[in-house]
Amino acid sequence: MTSTKDTTSSELLSVVASRELAGKRTVFAGIGLPTLAASLAHLTVAPELEIVYESGVCGAHPSHLPETIADAVLITGAEAVLSMPALFGNVLQGGHIDVGFLGAAQIDRWGNLNSSVIGDWADPAVRLPGPGGAMEVMANSGEVFVVMRRHDPRSFVDQLDFCTSPGPDRALADGIRPLGAGVTRVITDLGILARPGVGEPLRLVAVHPGVTAGQVRAATGWPLEVDGDLATIEPPAAAELRRLREQVDPGRVYLR
Amino acid sequence: MCGINLTLIRYWTLHNADWHGESVTDKTTTMAEAIAAFVHDGDTVALEGFTHLIPTAAGHEIIRQGRRDLTVVRMTADIVVDQMLAGGCVRKLVSSFVGNSSAGSLGELRRRIERADPEPLEFEEYSHYGMIGRYLAGAQRLPFYPVRSYGGSDLPSVNPGLRKVRSPYDDGEQVYVVPPVNPDVTIIHAQRADRSGNTQVWGLTGIQAEAVYAAKKAVVVVEEVVDDDVIRRDPNRTLIPSHAVDAVVACPRGAHPSFAQGYYDRDNAFYRGWSAISADPARLRGWLAEWVLGTRDHPEYVAKLGERYWAGLAVDDALSLPVNYGRRRENTR
Image 1: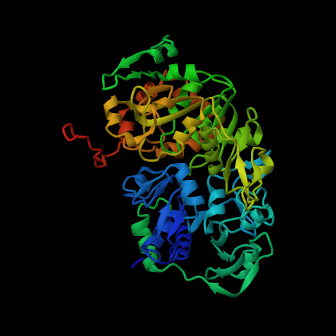
Image 2: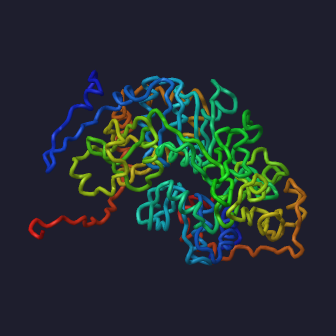
Image 3: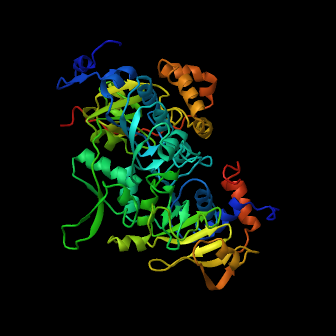
């Protein structure tokens, strides 16, 4: 019997994120928690799920858990390997991705993301990796799920230091027609924030057992609205953890 | 090969007798000759390879030859860029991702951008598809390339290359556009090419073809130079035809620490170790002195790592099945 008492934060976030993928067909996922969540969903709530990787791999059937989005194990045995113009142009901008997974250093109430700098862009306190494909994932996926390991006011900010990947509200204000809904789910160590799409701020819709709405509000840098019927997230079940530990990441590459 | 003028080499032709008596130009040369001939101080140099087939050995030779004031164009500026920055080769970086893959930070890059230490770095930031669009526009000699991203981003406020245009067609929709990039030279790494530069790549093919076509000159570094017949038996695998290639350099294991599908695996331990090396400027310069400046060429770097090390990156075979291109029968028409 798999113990559920020693669930790690990575396991918790992976399991909760995997449930959000129920019924989805295509997911654009980076390495780490998104891969774990998508792989687990494939074994549980979304058997039809196809993971598309930024490197150009569609329909991967890896022999080992990939260590990068371009790991050789993703290519060997894959259903398709595409060039960058095909992946970003035809697949992503062509509207074939249901859910894009993103992370960021900062997120605001509209689901806009900063992955470029802390401080001023021209003279930053910290230079972060930058957009990569995140801007395109945001602009073109049907919706975007964000996984944040630590829910604190440094990451959940009133004002971004820099907006790298804008949601649809900012795009519209700039006169650009967005294709997708932007961020609809934010899964954190405290709970789940959600927004239906354009024009709506992120609200707290669920908390992990033992977490209060007050705690989440205190950890959020803007006045966070709380859903009237705040749900309590079902903790990872033994079956989910067993699949995650034994089938998805047996080497515990990401399940730290 | 030392001392032989590269332009002379390119006029040496080898005659292959087939039905229309074509001739084949031999563009093979050494890494040292190729870098000396095609990379000059102040040039704009694109080094492409999306995690797979990163032209690291070419970057090392640029450091050995002490090139200065380069503008480096690379979608994912990772370890090889950090090394070229530490080697003092780079004045400006054009990129869409500046990090050590998922394995941590680039120490030299962060010091240059955050503290101008030891000198400032000009930085032009795009997204991945922005860079892809720049290469596409460059390759196709277009004035710009439209993309559906960037609306509402702060990037256009710090990058004047990002502009908004209105569609001339009925709906008048606005989109952002990116400018073309036409590097002085693009350098890529590939699995194999023939001596004239027909280049075959499998696995992740990234943006290499567009980056080559966008450039004024192109250098292809390969795991192996193969007979013309090897290429011609599988022409669909040719990503870049010889007409776009100026030099072919055989440099086995030249993509380390990245990988070459079917040849050797990615050196994940090296990526993880790089963050600690590059976090300390003295240690990083010590690494460069020992592994780049302290080796005469890439074969010496390979030998210094040792065969036991390489055995740890070896891969087993996973062969594709041959396809049948067919051959016209002699006596049926």
